[in-house]
Length: 64
Image (cartoon, rainbow, N blue to C red):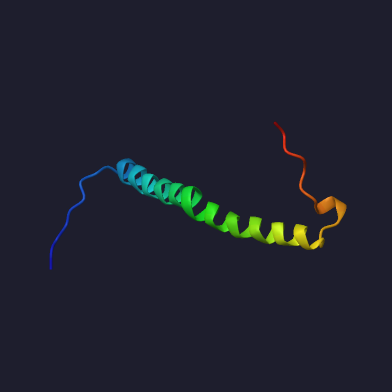
């Protein structure tokens, strides 16, 4: 059984917890969110190809 003492200030501990949280959020936004969006894009393309979209649901024209 090891004893560990944390001599960091409360502000430093909080900053490190927030940095860890930001790291998790960056991982989600950078990897997991795009993975979910690929599936949604596929479903939208299938609906569009099958003609199951009304005029309001059609994609907007691309802006160049």
